[in-house]
Length: 478
Image (cartoon, rainbow, N blue to C red; front, side, top):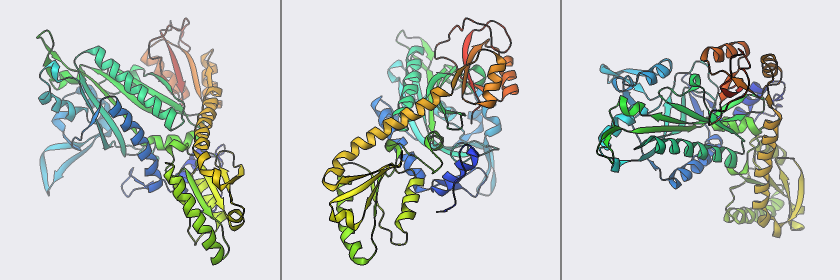
């Protein structure tokens, strides 16, 4: 671990982020351009997100499946809007086994094509519906500008793909999964998010509507944290997925898809970190408590080690993720700085004087405050401490987001605000794609979301002056 001070967030947020990812041993660049090697600490955060999501998927009736990585181009090309949207990002395999392939194979940028082509064989009657499936996979999208976790060519995610007998069923599914994403972002990652609907220009290719959760990072830039798509019958028609409905009529299936990716590791870093490094919400921390024994010689080491190991076992038995850092090659001060950088919520310091007094010192990553605790009372109070920290981190992030969410009274105010302050800026919009594009060109801000249900702003468009038909929230974003 480098002992050099991290860049200050306010002076160089991108530099701070890159150094935290590197020094906290979360990830590093892979040998192929745009690829990423996720290290144990980073993957541990992702595993906790996976578990939180997967538990909720199963609780809402979904099952996990797996579909192939390689997709025949003929399948991908069947859905024209989908292909057009992903064309610049698709990587194609043209040779295999030393020979040119008869048909090129796309490396999945997403799996609607291959899944809906399969659903055609699985669905004949309304009695076969709904199909409620999810898969945990990697995907590949050829990105020109990459940043670890936030935007890499290959990344990890889950993608849900469901088929339904009615439009209402599919829409309920779409919004239900959006709520699952909101719950995980807020209750597990402690990141407050807005839920909303994407503008037509920001929709997923092939979707009728795209819904999203949007968070605000500590540099006042927005981040799309998850999306859920109402596909209508677009993929049902493109891949001829038909069924006999309850009235005996032939009908195309209604679809949804939804995804949440490992970019949320990056979101957790940027939403909570400070100038000392990571601050992990306890629910997303692979190590919630670290014990650092302090000793000067073998005799003290033996005395402290026995108490430290019993303390570790008691904490683990209480269902708390704990690590005993008994490495001899590093001094306690080095360990304190390392675990602070890695964002471990609570640190317990235990030395010979503490053992003699039947106590320990507990330090919080949030405020850095230290407190002496009697060993007999320490374990029983840890869960409450962690719960309080989780709530405090969400409250802090919510206060930051609310302080950086503004109503724009004019386009000049919007443009100046986005440039000088960042954050979310809300104002009436005419619904015209050309107007949206002009604002983006002038300000480098995009419409992050519209209300779930269209809302009459009761005022003219903040940019062009035409009658407003919706309320748009703008921001510069990752």
